[in-house]
Amino acid sequence: MAKKSMIEREKKRQKLVEKYAAKRAALKEIINDESKPMEERFRATLKLAELPRNSSPTRLHNRCQLTGRPHAYYRKMKVSRIMLRELGSNGQIPGLVKSSW
Image 1 (cartoon, rainbow, N blue to C red):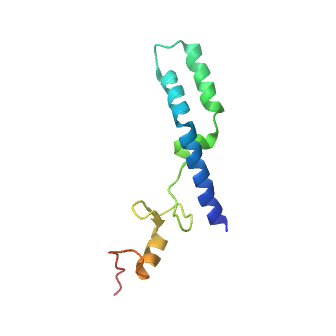
Image 2 (spheres, rainbow, N blue to C red):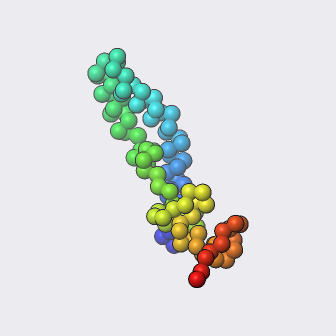
């Protein structure tokens, strides 16, 4: 059941990203503002570093909603290539026909 926990962990990360998005944006605005004094910019950098690591949007990964697989992810369907093939073979995705020869 490790894959299900990865899906849950990714959902938890998504909530953290949404929760801290405004705070991160405000701190980055201060850090990038050249007109502010260097000490204030440095304090903002330290505050940004104190935020939870998983609140950064770069920590998010696209994962298959069924298996949790992070690779070969189809954004439109939100599933991995393996599940896309399986669902297509079973006829569960409208308009998708798995070819065989």
